[in-house]
Amino acid sequence: MEALTGPAAVREFPAGDLPGLAERIREFLVAKVCRTGGHLGANLGVVELTIALHRVFDSPRDALVFDTGHQSYVHKILTGRAGEFAGLRQAGGIAGYPSRAESGHDWVENSHASTALSYADGIAKAVQLTTGPDEPARRVVAVIGDGAMTGGLAWEGLNNLGGAPDRPVIVVLNDNGRSYDPTIGGLARHLSGLRSADGHRAYFEELGFAYVGPVDGHDVAELEEALREAAAMWRPVVVHAVTAKGHGYRHAEADDADRMHACGVIDPVTGQPDAPGRPSWTHVFADEIAEVGADVPGVVCLTAAMLQPVGLKKFATRYPERVFDVGIAEQHAVCSAAGLAMGGLHPVVCVYATFLNRAFDQVLMDVALHGLGVTFVLDRAGVTGPDGPSHHGMWDTSMLAMVPGLRMAAPRDPARLRELLREAVGESSAPTVIRFPKATAGADLPAVARMDGIDILHRGGRLPLDVLLVATGVTAEAAVEAASQLSTEGIGVTVVDPRWILPVHPTVVHLADRHQLVVTAEDGVVSGGAGSAIAQACMAAGVRTPVHNLGLPAQFLAHGERPDILRQCGLDAHGIATTISRLVLASPAGEIVPSGRIA
Image 1 (cartoon, one colour):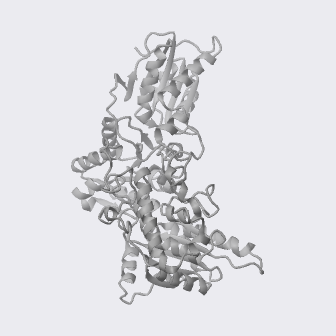
Image 2 (tube, helix red, strand yellow):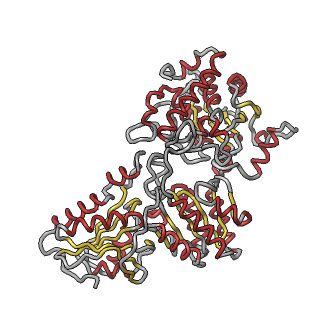
Image 3 (cartoon, helix red, strand yellow):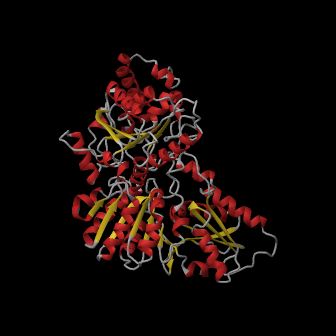
């Protein structure tokens, strides 16, 4: 792979050597991704396609834009980054998605789906306006999967591209019949008709595109011919390439569930994890929502092309008529959920926290404005780790804090997840949210007492200094450990878990008034988050106790291991204890007014 120093080297390969090159790239991908984890199946499916793209087009002068970007590993190899794959998705190493900081060959860092066609539209307009009459022509190529084509933004881009015959954008439709799960809806049926060559006229032609295909997405020669034909037309063109996700790796090919779309560290020979891990938060939710389905017949579930990743497979197996996969269309999922609620059901919308960003308007105006009982289950909330800045689910609390009537819960342990989910689906007049991280679910952390629905996890004791530490969700374990450490320094810390973190419960404000210092901890953006809401509530109530908020900075955090990122942000036990100790020591004498404690 080291010989692949850039696209020019790829173009110099004799045509007869390309099948062997593709095989070596697949072997390289399996060896490296099995060691680090990452998106394996998606990249195995586009090896020949990416080779053909770099042989026909001149990157980066010609712009290659990969939708979603999880299939860009082959692109990285062909643009000279094979030697960096030992650090794939690890702190300081190369990203699992395109990265403008890594290479000029990466035009966009798009790791949310359905964006490439709009990017391509804008880039093509810029090329048209900035390329001089004597300069060589430049082309714009957008690679988008059939799954990503189920998103509404893709159709907005397609509509604009097809309506501009003077901007020759080439849309490469990578048709493998899947996004994460199998592609659904009318588009899937249409593409199936095109693949079967039964006389279908491509819908794309009605929108203003020329149509080339379908072509074998695992035949470099056929792909090159199709791409050169498209490039010669100088008009908007769709090249329909049919590929197989996971192609060439038997464990991925045999994986009917997702063709090994993404994997953790696995044995490349067996395709299995080196050692089974503890149940994840997603598994806990999966078991409980299936039980909720039995107890609450009005509960229905929605997913945006991620039935298995968000834990709905068991529910769907038991109640197939009560689960709806709407494709990569979060806006539609939420608005459709509003309609289901209007019809007398209780929808549970299950998405990654980062993807709910795309449907904020629907949460606000289509659910909350109508006072509808819709529950949002946000998987991968907080720091996710190796997937990097686009996938950290760290924006949801700050974003949703402004939604009138919305209630958000952050369970600290599996027992609370089950408990809070039951409470959420019992709410019929306002939206509710349950958020949990991408992590293993540890042991339950019992409360020593409950006060008005607020769990007291640790009492400060009769020490001279008395601090209230409000821990949201999975920060609770670190908070309790920090409180134990601080007791040896003569600092008494009472740790409480509000369970429902938004809106602020009046009891939290009452407790704040009875302490000398309040510190909040959350695994979301600190600006406008749950801690900020507590500080505002205390101010509104005239509580003079100082409030200090701990959380994630309002920055795009790089990829790395989740515990390391939390530690760097001061959200581990040591970081929380250090912050509290510093705040206490820095307080001028007499500034903190002694106050009562929990009896």
